Image (cartoon, rainbow, N blue to C red):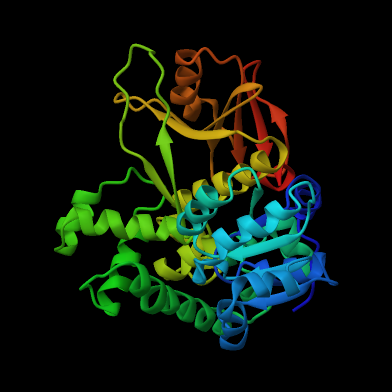
Amino acid sequence: MSLVKRTISEKLNKYLKLFPIVVVVGPRQSGKTTFAKMELPEWRYFDMERPSDFGRASADIEFFLGQYGEHCIIDEAQILSELFPALRSYVDLKRAKKGRIVLLGSVNPLLVKNISETLAGRVGFIEIHPFDYSEANKLRKMKLEKFWLNGGYPEPLLRNENDRLVWMEQYVKTFVERDVLSLLKTSISSQQQIQLLIMVAHNHAKLWNASQTASAFGVSYHTVNRYIELMETYFLIDKLVPYYKNVGKRLVKSSKMYFRDTGLLHYLLNVSSIEALRTSPYRGFSFEGFVIEQLKRKYIRESSGARFYFYRTSQGDEIDFLVHDKKGLHAYEIKTTTMIDIEDLKGFKRSLDQLGLKKGTVVYFGSQDFNLDKQIEVKAISNLL
């Protein structure tokens, strides 16, 4: 695969100067291994999914670290849980020394929990995603709409339509038959799980109601919630929580749920061409999730500690995406249109007033940036990314 300089490479270099261990987490096939090998070509690489590497490390972990621990990349580190206490002892022998080991993993909370408990203060975390638009464009020149359709997983970006769909099918199959099986003791068959994934895709960017999905599916809502948690664990979806502030309004309490990669979403919704995307009833929801995911990454790169919300009152006034960072609250309304009509923004403007915000941004599918009035600036998605 062609090598593309990732936007997080700067963060890796910074963290290697700050911590003895850096952990890179992200979904399967998002380019973790390629990224680590490209950034650290001189480092030794071990993959715990490869029996020979696993055998070598697990036979005597302390000996393994003594031999190979300096400038060492360990892939799918969560498979060997005994590694973490041994790493702690190993690092503490030369506590002041930074940039020694990079761990890669595709299971979010499990890996993070294990490492955070055992290696507190010795480790920095970096999340890697499928490509964003600027990265994908370096791999293969494409219009933004094409990127929105196909998503950012590096491998399928280089494939033709049919091969891309086969790749997605295998990706879903791996999640269902391997990842779910190893973490979720479930009686739901593979076929039913795929139906459930499709059902979840139909709820993308909508208020999430586990009970509704569970009763439609004929299982308990605990089962559905556990499944959703697992999808979050493997970085497939994300939840956006409602923003609460005492604004004297009844506020919506449910979360919204998004697929993090629109290529995977469109595969599950059977949207396989630009034409199908333009006419799909899910177009607006898909675009909202797409913009939110891209904006989130931008904020995470630029300011640590940013928090993300949406805002909605029971009267229907709404802000699609709210960011709370060091500079305060930033409000975004997301429109799939190429024209902006002030009439469509009344609920957004009322929400800004309720939260005491002087400014709000509308992100749309047009090509020009402009100010609509003193309160609203309009930004083209292509300029924003």
